Image (tube, rainbow, N blue to C red):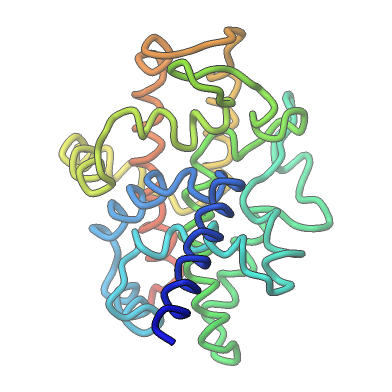
Length: 265
């Protein structure tokens, strides 16, 4: 029995590793979301801390920030048929989100509204309220990644293929994780570094809970991060690292701002 148990465990481990390798998008962006979550945890109100203790005892905002991506593998109908569009919005060039609105299947903006209702609804189950809270944290982070405000032409930069540090990649992957991972910092090291660089004036200025503002900011940045080169490395990082770090910092502050407003007494 012991041999069979070990063998079964080895098979499961192999299958999981194979599945992750076949779906690398699952792992992309973990550090970015955790950095934003860790920054947010330093600015949330006592009311938000109480909700966290109720729904996710002994877990942090950084930990729950990646659950919306992790659950892409969840076989439940919600995750396979409904949740996908809640990670992005589409704003074609020359328009605004107000102009185009959300498609019928919804998007990150409508998902944020829906989950904000769920998490405060006492008629919802604990599991539904947990999903709502971790998806809120995730969506705020997503809307600060410029390519999650897509132009409707290239799947948020996923179709823009290029090498990054001599490995095959695409523009979306570079912004989700490539530049961040190239810094060789853990998410706690990265968040500490960004926190030390923030001024009180910046924090006050960035305490903006309106997702329309975040969307417009990402739209304004988006076109400037495209490249016509077939390969990018240090020069691209040098040109864009400040903008990326600012968006990570803002995502953390805005996550706190949004939750604080949502749970104000």
